[in-house]
Image (cartoon, rainbow, N blue to C red):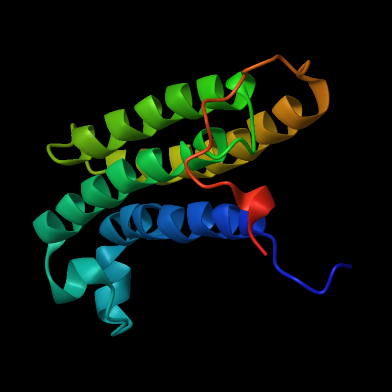
Length: 150
């Protein structure tokens, strides 16, 4: 207990915050009829499926960029970076493919991938933290020098 919120904790919060919209909107696309019957104003109901698909893509691009911040700030190393890039490419594949899905089930496949994505992303963060050997000059010069803040 330090009595403060470390900026790295805010980075983890930001990742989950940006991950949430594409995750739930993919489910909302698949379950839009259920949401409409229950009068729940989810994005596919209020603004349409096409609009929602564009937002899934936009937030996925933003998510991929945000997941690079732990490496850019020196919070993690190359193991995490590699995992984040590969997982992000997978999520981008699903988001782009969702624009013209092969079938109605593809939105649910995107939703399922998003769950695996977040679990694997944080697993890479843990593996990087506990198993990576510290290398000199492993991370680029920090964009934000969090250790010197506060």
